[in-house]
Amino acid sequence: MASVTIVGGGPAGLSAGVFASKNGLDVTVYDTDGTWMHKAHLFNYLGIGSVGGSEFIEIARQQAEDFGVDLKQDHEVTGVEVDGEEFHITSEEGEITSDYLVLATGADRSLAEEIGCEFNENGTVNVDVTMETSINDAYATGAMVRAEEWQAVISAGDGAAAALNILTKERGDHFHDFDVPADATAAFGEMRKDAVDE
Image (cartoon, rainbow, N blue to C red; front, top):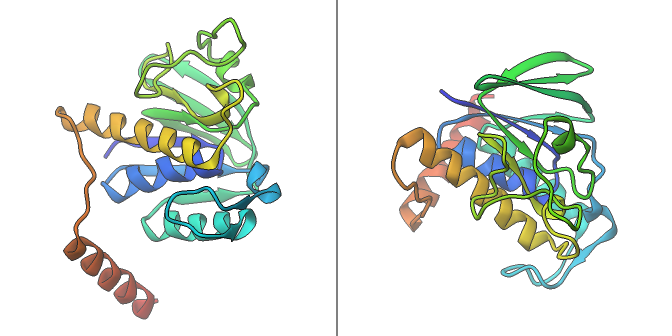
């Protein structure tokens, strides 16, 4: 199973985590809880009438964990190195290796600079439509790649795009994550079973 390490636990990082983990990848999210969502109240997020940003993040974290994401809350990533086809991620816990890296650290682009990503003239990280950077298998999302379009729904879409491209690479064909009502019923039943087993 391919491993995905996500640095940042806002809408972009958690969205990438949900899509990747629910489809069988081994996902770790490092989150220092520095998301701008704690200053927000969502009225403009499609499908949500009104929710506080902190409440939204708590729901998103729970959803990610329900789908199997290993959420390293309050763990800061202090360094990333590229070694051939692997990434070495260092945190206060030590070092892990990962097949894929998703950077979701808002306007803090220091890790992208550290691993040698190309930047645009406006200071944003240069990515393609799938959110992949100039470094193979490294992705940048949200405010890292947009000078001013800092919206939760855009960031969540960027995270989903990164995860779907990783899944496409792993499966060897265009991957689609399209659920139907029967999938939701089955997933809810499995979550209830897991809760009872605990």
